[in-house]
Amino acid sequence: MATLYTHYDSNTRKTWLIFAVFLGLVIALGWFASYYFNDPLILVVAISVSVFSNIFAYWYSDTIALKVSGARPATREDFFDLYTITENLAITAGIPIPKLYVIDEQIPNAFATGRDPQHGAVAVTTGLLAIMERNELEGIIAHELSHIGNRDTLVATVVVILVGFIALLSDMFLRFSLFRGGDRDSRASGIIMLVGIVLVVLSPIVATLMQLAISRKREFLADASGALLTRYPDGLARALTKLENHSGQLSRANHATAHLYISNPFGAHARGALNKLFSTHPPIKERIKALTEEVVG
Picture 1 (spheres, rainbow, N blue to C red):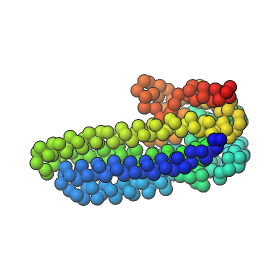
Picture 2: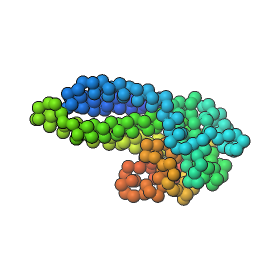
Picture 3: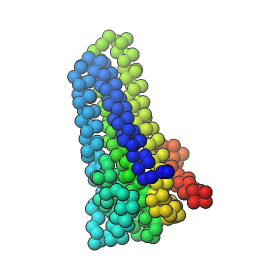
Picture 4: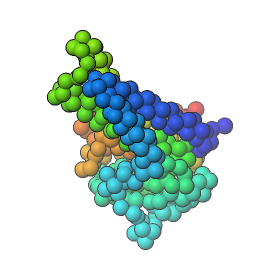
């Protein structure tokens, strides 16, 4: 039978896989750059920076995500219902009560972060608190606690740092290659340059596709786990309907952190064909259908 921790071990392994893929991409980029510019120091720097980035992403990616979103700590006195709902659900789920944050935004949305259940955090917008009934808010919080319990938050927040770093490194390589020629012979230099450019172009695409695949699947899993936690799937289904009806772009929406949110923080701006293709979220209608079909089934 599925439990809140069904995907915990899987996501732990997935995190190590992401670290390995990231390290491999950076080493490959560093090797091509060092060969093309005939400077072994570039490879040493690339490996050192990639190792540091992995460590930094593991320990501090959650803090960065909260800062980027503009979240501030929520006090029990000001957000009593949020606290009691979260405490009750966390106790039911058997996980530590996460730290709670609010984002001063009228657009309803929420996300969870943290490298493990002992360091979990949930952030909700003031707009979400304003429109959700208690059982709907329970559905939202249960969804976010499922991310924490399943350790989705570790995978998601690590991706925030590593995907951004790969894109930055690729851009730097392209710029250097355009303004500084290689020291190898022209033919070898041309081949290395061509392979390097292909790698540079493909690296951020691969990283982004990995991000999309992880994000879309985990939303369905968190919906199912959240419904299992509350024993009331209709509450989450109604909450998702409200999120769709009140969609809009958050003022601090960011492509690096978009996949963390329960619904796309770009709102209507993400409804174009190309944006849908690269969206980090499955369509809300599909998520509602999955929940209601489970109820009927």
